[in-house]
Length: 451
Image 1 (cartoon, rainbow, N blue to C red):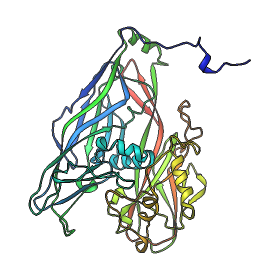
Image 2 (cartoon, one colour):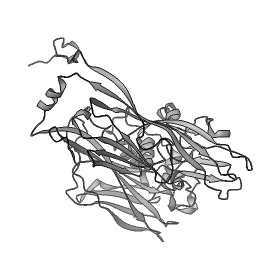
Image 3 (tube, rainbow, N blue to C red):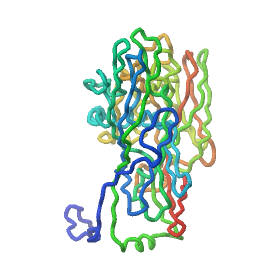
C-alpha cells in the first residue's frame, strides 16, 4: 500500500484547543525574602496550584550586585555568571524532594561549553552575564572565539572600590522544565523550587594589582523572579486529565542530572586506576567526566577548568553494569576522536547541524595539559575545556521511554590510565544524564520519581 508524503495529506486530523483556553505569563518572587547573599543562603519559590505549566518556559531573572573590598581592584566571575553562584537546585512537591542537583553552576558551565556554539553564546551573552569590566562592572568585553566565558567584575584603583550591578536571565534547568508534557500544577501538591547559593571562593576571584590576595567582595542577589507560562484549558479539562490516569497515576517523561565527585590523588608517574561512583540509575542517557583544575598550578579556575586528566597518551573508559563505554578506551593519542565522542554524547555522529560545542583547539589541548612542564595558564575568559563524554542510549529518540543503559543497581566505574605525573590532587566529577518518569497520583496529589 502506497503512502502519500505528509506534505499532501490534506485530510490528516488536526488538534485544536478548547475555545476557553487562556495563556498567562506568571512571575513568582521568593517567599522567604527579597535579598540574598553568597555562601549557603536558601531561596524559595512557591508555584501556583492551578493550570498547566509550560516547563520549557521556566526562567530565573535577577540582579547580581558586587561590592569590592576597599583594597580590591580586580574581580572575576568564573563559568556562566548567571548560574555559577548556584550550588544546588531542589524541586519539592507536596513536601517531598523530587530532585536535587548539586554543583549546579559547574554542571551549567559544562553544558554551555559542550552544547552551545560560539554564535549562541554570543547571542546569550547579555542573559548569561558574560563580559563585564569597567567601573561598576557594567561594561562588555568584545566577544572573540575564546572569551565567551566568565565576567570581569567591578574595577577600581587603590581604595576606590566601585560597586557594580548587572542583570541576568537564566533558563532554569530542572526535572520540571525538562518534562515532555505540560506540568499539571492543579493536580499536584504544593510545588516549590529551592535554590542554595554557593561559596564565593568556588566561582569568584578577587586580587589587587600585584596579584596578592585581597579581601573578599560582598555579593548580593536582588530582584529575583521566576517566570513561566501557565495554560488554562477551561473547566472541563480536570475530568479529561483524570480520565487519562492509569491505576490512578499520570506519568510524565523527563530527564535529570546526577553530579558526583571523587578525589583524584597526586600521581608520581603513569598509572591505571578505577574510580567508583555510587550512582545507580535505570536509564542513563550519557556520561561526562571532568578533571578539575587543581591538578595543575596554571589552571586557575579550579572547579571550572577541565584538564586532560589522562595526560598526553593516556585513556579514559566508562563502565555501566560492567559493560564498557566505549568498547575500547578513549585514547588521548587521538584527541579528535575523544572530542567526537563528547559531541555525540549530545547527539548522533552525523547530526552536525544540532550537535555543537564552543570548545576551541587551544582550550581543548593547550590549556588542558596536566603536566606542569607543558601547561599553559588559563584565565577566566579562556578556561581549559577538556571534558570527556559518551552516549549510552540504546536508541537516541525522545519518542522512546527509558532508552538509556541501566546500571542494574551497581555503581558506575571510570577507568583512568594516566601517562604523566600530576602536580596536585584534584577532583574527578561525573555528570550523568538520565531518564526520569514522574508518576502523579491524581487522587492523593502525591508525586513519585522513577529513575
